[in-house]
Each structure stands twice: as C-alpha cells, then as structure tokens.
Image (tube, rainbow, N blue to C red; front, top):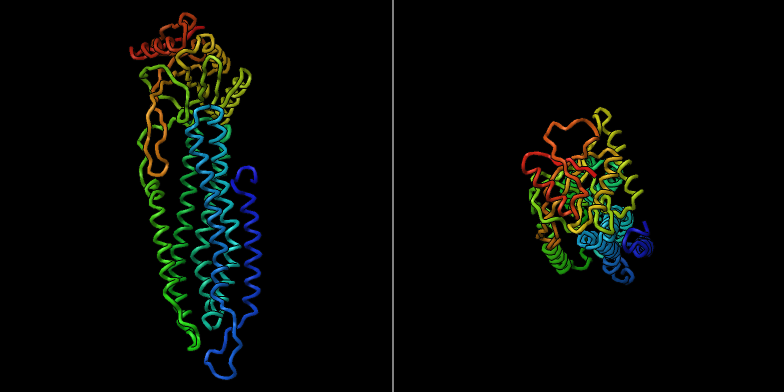
Length: 436
C-alpha cells in the first residue's frame, strides 16, 4: 500500500501524531472539572480557557481528512493523466497506477480517520463542558450520538464501498472481455447499493442524534456563571459548510451528467492511441480480445507483447472463456485487430497466424474516428468512435454459411489495403476469407 497510495507515509505519520495529540488533550480534559454552577461558596481557582483545547481537538481529524482528500485527488489526477497519455505502455501503467491509488486511498481514509475522530469527539466534548461550566456527561453523550449514529455509517459505508470495488476490479483479471464487462458492471452496481444503504442509515442516524442531542443539551442546562456563548463560531461553521457545498458543485454535476449512450468497447479501445485506416466499417466492434499491430509494435489488451507473449495471452484468454462457458462449442472465436494504415502485410500475417493457431477464426478490423467528450469535472476527454469489418480465417472450425470471398493478404502491401478490401466485401453482404 505504501507504494501505490499517494502521501502514504505522510498520512501514517499524521495519524500517529494527531492520535497522540488527541490522547494528550483527552488526558488534560479528564483532569479538568467544571467550576461551581451556582456561583456560591469559595471562588473557584482561575482556569485557562478550555475553548481553544476543544478547537484543537476538532482540528486534528479535520486536518487528517484534508490529507486523505489530497491523497485521493492525486490518485484521481493520475488516472485522468493515464487516460490522456499518448504512449501505449505509459497509458496502461499510469491508468493502473491511478486506479490503485484512487481506490486504495478511499479505503484507507475511513480506516485512519475513524479512531482519530472518536478520540477527538471525546476530548472536544470534555473541554467544551469545562468552557460552558456544565456537567460533561450530557455533552459527551450528545457528541457521541452525533458521530456514532450519524457519521460512522457514512465512514463504514465508504470503507466497504472502496474495499468491495477493489475486489471487483481484482476479481476479473484474466477473464474474457465480454464476461469482464458484465462482472465489473454488476459488481459496481452492487457496491453502489451497499454505499446507498449505509448512507441512508447515516442520514436517519443524524436525524435521531439531532433530536436526542437537543433534548440532552437542554436538560443539561448552563450555569449562570458560565461564559456567554457567541454566535461567531456558529456563523463561521455555517459559512464553511456553504463554501464546501459550493465547492462540491462540479462533483455533483459530474455525477449527475449522463454519459453518451454508446456501446461499451472496453478500456483498450477507449484508450487507443494508434491511428487506424480511414474507413467506416459496416459492423459493430465485437466484445473480444484486442490486438494492436504496427510495423514495430504489438499490443495485446494495451500491453506490449512479443510473439510468444501474444500467443500465451490468446491461449490463456481462450481457456478462461471455455472454463466459464463449458457448454458453448468452440468458445469465443472473435479477435479485434487494430493496425496502423502503414503497417506491412507481413506484420499483419504474423498476428493472423497466431489467431489461426489459437482458433480465433473471426478477426475483425477496427476503425476509429477521434472525437472528444466534455465533462463538468474531468474536462475534455479524448474518445474514439468505433466501427469494424469482420473477416474469417477459412479452415478453422465449421463451414461458414455466409458467402465467403477469398482475400490473399500477401497481395496487399499494407494493412490499410487489406482492411479496405475486407470492409468493401462486408458492405456487399459477404465475408472475406483471409488466406496467407
């Protein structure tokens, strides 16, 4: 975790220091007793003001929460930087680093903040009781009700949501593309339901705690010798809450703004950086494994592969599909190919040979058009609009009922020429049978 979470050691050190400070403030508060409530008898010895002790106690978890928010923000910025990267290897590495930082920081935050917040509430309540010259138990009870019944469900829900999201993302490693999309989508929906439930409990808890706190505080009363309570602190808190509400407007807009209705094509296509032939394909891009090829680069799922690594990747993904679909004959036969227009046919043939050996008999050439997407918080995001032209490798699997037009790949100098020929045949209602 220290390697993936931004500011990890700062968060750990801050938690220890703030925790020790809260314990020290709590020890000071226990030794202090409120003065006489009725002003009679011997005058109580002069005491140092307790209000600043209470402010210091509350400032600790606020500072820690700010550091946690900064860590999460750094992870989020890393994720966005990876999406906008222009180098394939850098793109994948930075996106993975951003996801690890973003999700793990969200899980670590409530874990660190919870204990510190509990100590801070007790210390602040006791010092506030000494300042107001009231019995400490009612004020401590009201504060613990507010945190325990209201804020704790939010923290616990956030912790469960973050940890379950990590499990969802980690659990789809090596799973077929089509199943991966279903598993991630369903998993995120379930984790969101979990967060919603705990948020509802927290909201109800805040209401119950507010009513009980008012009753407890009114019954406790304030002695006549107590200092007058100024409205300044309440006004400052209200102003701070209003400022935070306004500052969160871009985040609310991001959450409520719908994404364009378009079929999901997977992360590798979404983050593609390789130019494709300028063709409008007649087919939709099938949910399948993706191989990107240029004259000097081969990517599988967005990761650089050599020839043997590409073969191993295709074999593993095919075997995984068969394990998940034991009753489906032949398994997934589709393989999406992105090739730069100037890619030599010899490089394309290498990919087709591995596809044939691993029984991916339905290659589909993908064609992308660069577009952009404007988001309230994320800003301008690069996007692609994808189409495809499906082909066939004859001699693998059963006979194809659709009319097959032979296409000899060696007869074309580049991938651009091959892809255009395949697309033209598909527009004629037939399918190209690739020979090589």
